[in-house]
Length: 222
Image 1 (cartoon, rainbow, N blue to C red):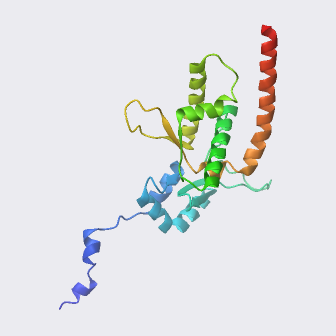
Image 2: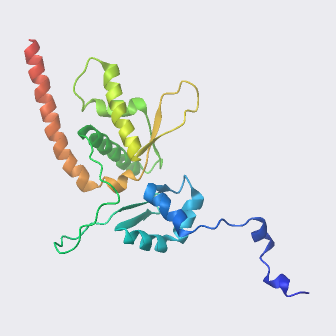
Image 3: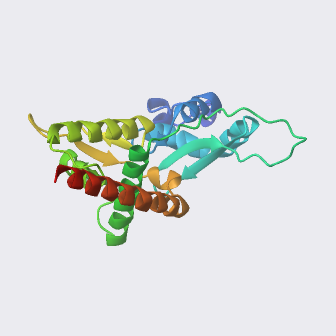
């Protein structure tokens, strides 16, 4: 028997060759956004295999690689620069995006919904219908007799959250179905306890202002 057979690749490996991932194919998706295990299992497996090299690569760009294996997502974020006047200030590769108050409010409410879901130990996915989102935010919006306009405003804020990648719109399962959304768990990485505490203080001030404005409006009508 020829020794060539001993050196040959197994028949199964020939029939089902594994895709070859290079470092660029892993890093580029990370620089473009969040990598989710449930959206691209092959990319996720490649990231696990090349994780150390990917972390070293993005470190050169002053970025940190964050991988949450329990939740199934990975992303890069700007490294906190030390306050050293002598050191050169590096430009941010990952841009900060200023958020309006109502977008911040929606993020905080969705984050709390995730915490409530986790506390119950039930479903892993947080799925909300559009009406649920509207009712969740409505009580923090100025009173309005135009319900359609109010819903449009809330949907505008929700679309911004979708654009940021914290929520995704699910496909309708039947004709005429109302919009349904999934809150992505990566929200937990960006909205921590301190962020919520700081926002709660702003929210109290906002609610007080909202209450005062409504009282003044009621008095003016009398």
